[in-house]
Length: 96
Image (cartoon, rainbow, N blue to C red; front, side):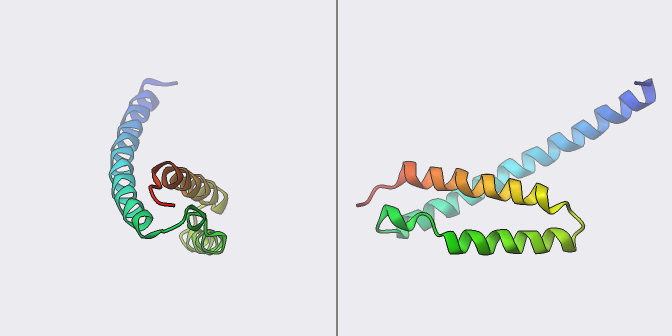
C-alpha cells in the first residue's frame, strides 16, 4: 500500500471509530427502551412477536432500497440485533 493510501486508510478508520461510538450510544438508548417494553410483558411467551419481526424486516428492506443500501447487509444487521434483544429480554424477564 502506498504511503498516501496508508494515510487515507488511517483517516477512514478514524471515521469508522467515530461512527462505532455513535452506534454504541444508539444501542444503549435502544436497550433502555427495550427494557421498558419488557416491563410491560406479563408472560415470557410475549417476548417473540414473529409478525412484528417480519414487518420490521420488510420495512428495513424497503428503506434500504430507497437509500441505495444493500438490503442483505441491513437484513443481517437487523436480524442479529432483533435476536440479540430477544435474548436480552429472555435473560431479564422477571415475571411468570
